[in-house]
Length: 151
Image (tube, rainbow, N blue to C red; front, side, top):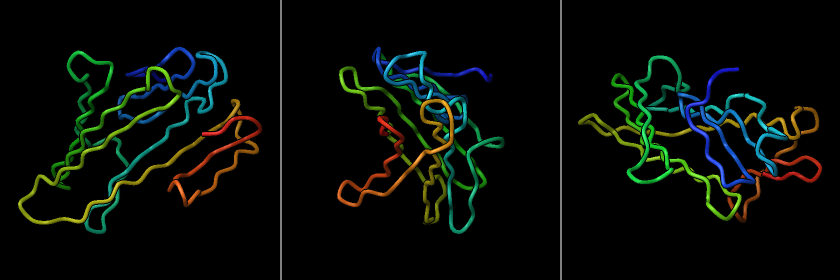
């Protein structure tokens, strides 16, 4: 198992991230049991003016925390694309909600079209068979579910 850089938890819900700010573990409703990601990487990538790349090797990545908080601050940058991301993550203290804010900056002098892409690789209840997902248009959300678990 690869090490985790960050673990957020409110005692019932926990999310662990790797050194590239990718979700690797999702524990609910008991921290340490029922890992709904089982270490599989929930990746994200950047599309800049027709070029796409997953965030992995070749990106400058620095992790810290926002001052006096348990909120992460990942700074992710790729000079050749002219893109810098600041990603802040936290778990709500009383609700079982993982929060992620991404600030995208164009560090070049010319205008660019930049898009962010996300992938989820749930293994709800610890195994992949039977995982289902759908787009829910009224909340503009992707819902993942199996049996009694919904994300």
